[in-house]
Figure 1 (cartoon, rainbow, N blue to C red):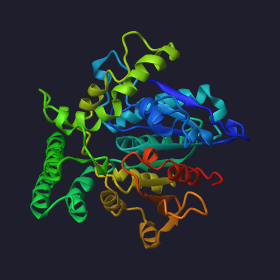
Figure 2 (cartoon, rainbow, N blue to C red):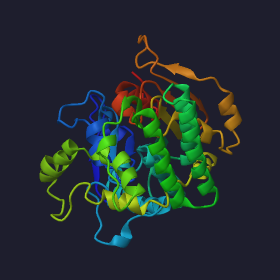
Figure 3 (cartoon, rainbow, N blue to C red):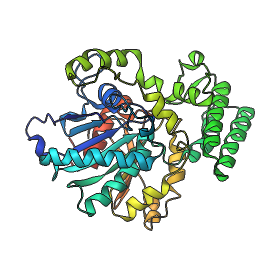
Figure 4 (cartoon, helix red, strand yellow):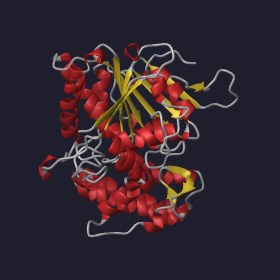
Length: 401
């Protein structure tokens, strides 16, 4: 498993005095060391120009290409690809145990897991497994909490909310709404029968129904059009190929691939000749097919009961994991303090005290928080860098400028 650590580049404080944040990308099969690093929160963008809203200015950032086979991570054993989040978590604990043993200066540093999309589903499982390992004394780490960004925690809650959401913003008419809802109901029926791979196939079909009725709305930002729609082709792998092309290939653009397999690979000097960045991502994606539609709400509940800090954040313009769907699964949490959380009114958030526009809304009760990030799609830090930084500071208890 390949990982990439940036020590915090703070103007006045030593990096050991600042939190450590691990970033997990989605997919599954998308590279945090590539996309998260150069497209979202790292110190340089894809053109190697400095990023004004880099998280590295205030925290240490650990990118991990996860699961095995993602990015520069690789395996020579076909049986080593993860097929569920439990395996993903077990593999990650091997890495984290070695990381904190070899980087002992981080053992007492507050450690947070931040995630995006499918990375959030994996982050929840990893967080719970890590909490248990710390309690057992097997990993020396000061765990600060987990942040689930636009996360695929309960896929069916997203799928069932797509139709009403798109209809409410005039991207579906009544006939289109009926078609989308009928397709979504088939996904729900398959899930109720425990037919997880069938549910994954029906999920893909529901997305196609939406694309047809909306003239190609972008699942990652409803205000834009999906420029890849006409380029996608079905292959012998059918729906998995369609899902892969829609949700993973855009995170491995030609420009990013050329950067990672060119200058970055040359600079690293440790990547085996047989390994290319992203070369096994399709294998990662296909091996997780039976896990795609399984919910992990119960894991989030266990984290809350264990008093682990949990934050949910979501972009207003996201469709694939729309905020309505996120709110719906949050309502299903059995955490005993959920009623107190829900009874709170949200607060507005501005990136600067004198800023005219509201950047987000949020509310928090004890160890659970929710952030609604305005004018952001699925990739929140890319769309709203300053708001993301503000949220980062609040979650990690840093002074907010």
